[in-house]
Image 1: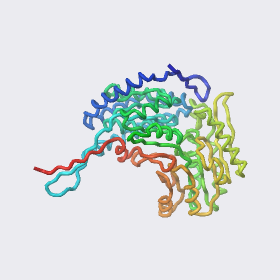
Image 2: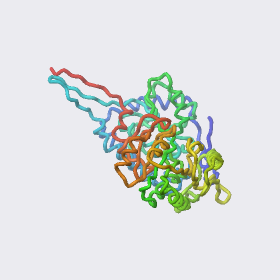
Image 3: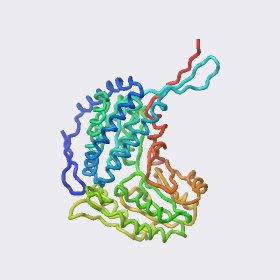
Image 4: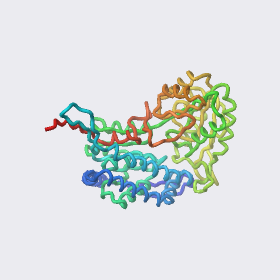
Length: 460
């Protein structure tokens, strides 16, 4: 059995060791899921909602332990880890609140003498592959709706945050979910690809890198199976001359540096209109000082370490490339350590960044904010859309009508006005271009997790 060690990115100490599931173990888990899923699907939706609510309440009671596990595995400050627990529970409860309505039979208008309606049925087994950066949130997005819809779930968590999968499994089993209907598995890339190719897996929900999404798509090639892929981003903001700059700078700094910038919808590119460019830069530099690397277990820490060791070199490369192409480094730009330990990176602000810089083209996934000057809305629309990614974008302005018109032309799944780096579960979460396919959450979130069957009945 292969064993994997997880280190604490703030200290280098080993947090846990775990063994990868063997082929036989994964086969047994999948076989159990098929059987347990049928038992679970036979329950009415209201009963499934009740089980999910008990599980979520259990995770709330376990909030402190969950938060410590998140912080020790991937470095998120403890206060932010607690916030992730709370947000995950709120997100789950929203999906619970709409489940009965969304999963009920939908009657349709038909001709006299006929009854037409649409039924929603579970798919069967859902393979959920969440990411390490928000190990609860990226799991909940698909896990809770999948269970509410009557599916069984194999939860294959990241090898960076393996302890989180066990928290979910225990909470749902204690809440009354049939044994086998939710199983946390530990699988490497090769074993995960085999699960994706297995005909007993009816849907794959993946959150992670664009490269990872491509690999899973290849593994599913030849199968008529749906994949939901929530992938990378290089999200942009357009700051118009009529924006309220103080609050804009505060929000953009948070959008760039929260979770050490390790957010798929974090702000990485900022375009500002000529009239406010210099003032906005000064404010962003001032705000970057609020985000200092610190011990994630310290309640006062705003920014923890980088979860992955490879992130430091990539961020250094993006900074060096931008400066080489003419950008100005105004804040940060270097790795850091605390007492000689940890893999941290300073909150970084780059000005006058050209469009061909790597940071403008590729996802940095760290506390790096690239700022450029633009003349008008048309230039901004073109600049925001000049990306292979399309997850979110934000407009900062007092002009609602103009901002709405700009938003309609942006090639992204979510458009914000005077806000960024936020997910409301009432809205579908989706990506365009290399940011992925499919969607999660909202009333539409059950569409990909159910089969539809039409009834066309001639009345006797």
